[in-house]
Image (cartoon, rainbow, N blue to C red; front, side):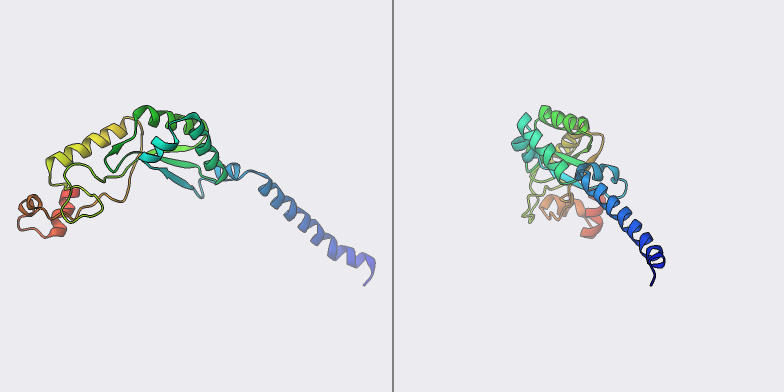
Length: 188
């Protein structure tokens, strides 16, 4: 093959490879955080800071710095900050401080509630779920969500919002309904 034919065949391949290498290099030279922010409409990576994490890790400037840096290093663009879990209320000032810091850093921020160990314990529910037939449990649940809604515009409810309680109060309230119908109506 003569030199001219060789150059016509190889030159486009070389230019194409150079463009691909330059494109890949520019993508990888961006921080994961910058790449994640630019692509969050395609893929949003989130994390949850539990109420106890809020107390233990987000209550100091150093802890917040570490949390923000960790989120950026791992490409997280949205954080859920939990106000209540397992009978523990995270402090309002700490929740507000964490919310504001993450917002300032460019994250999407929402609240979260995990409905465990509140009000009257449900019978036969080893994970600490409440009896939602109990008025005290309902009032506590309302208090928790009002508290959280006073801080966050969006609240994720962790997946513990269900019941299997079969205490005497639930049995009486269920009447002739099936357990499924009673539980569905109660939770709605």
